Length: 309
Image 1 (cartoon, one colour):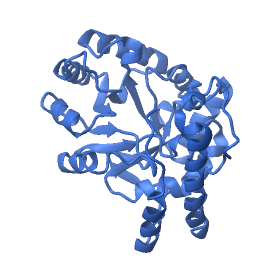
Image 2 (tube, one colour):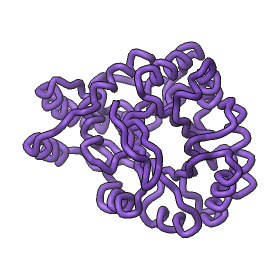
Image 3 (cartoon, rainbow, N blue to C red):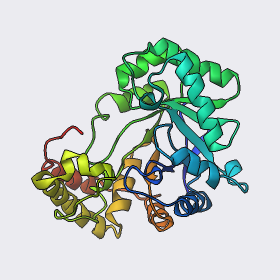
């Protein structure tokens, strides 16, 4: 495993972290024993950063069970306060949220506590003051934000220092490149990239005929439907040609492409089985030539127009 520093003055964390949305059931049901085995397999393999959220359904509770028997001491535990559960990011809501998360995760301190989304209903000053208060109380070690753009991060920094932002970033979703990544580099903010496989579009495991059950969020996303789905998969197939040349799976290739940037501190990889974890490890240490990067850009120029989800 490789390690990178989480923001200016932050701790060293692994370049791969386990994103725990899938085990909460958001992409189809995962039974409890499988979820526990998955979390433990991740930590045993060196993927010791575990990222969850208040909004990730049963995820925090399952992780709390998985981190018994010495596993809590071996991991860097991150979670988020989520407005779609608490209702807002007011001081009162954040205080209630941390207590709920501590109980579910069966711990007395969160290593990285993050504001899940920007919220126009709660002043960011109040939200960040509440996060700083939790840090002063010893309930959290580091503060982070999630899905903030450069302007929003700038506003948050006026109230309290934070160490990370967690945006969506993958070969198909590159909105953070022009402004957000440079801002994080200037301000010493680490980046935890979520959705590195575009929720499965970059796995090489689907055909255009694939359908998703109602309990899988992808059944409601436009990019997983009809001609749009087929066009994404066509681009992924072309990227897979380069991956094969490098003797990588498309999964490993897609994660390694993100890690090519020093600004990306950690890539959060989701999984539903312990077996998937081993594949992710093959993305660590991969390097790209200038020619390969140029070929990737050429293929992505054919990528279909972004469709909001």
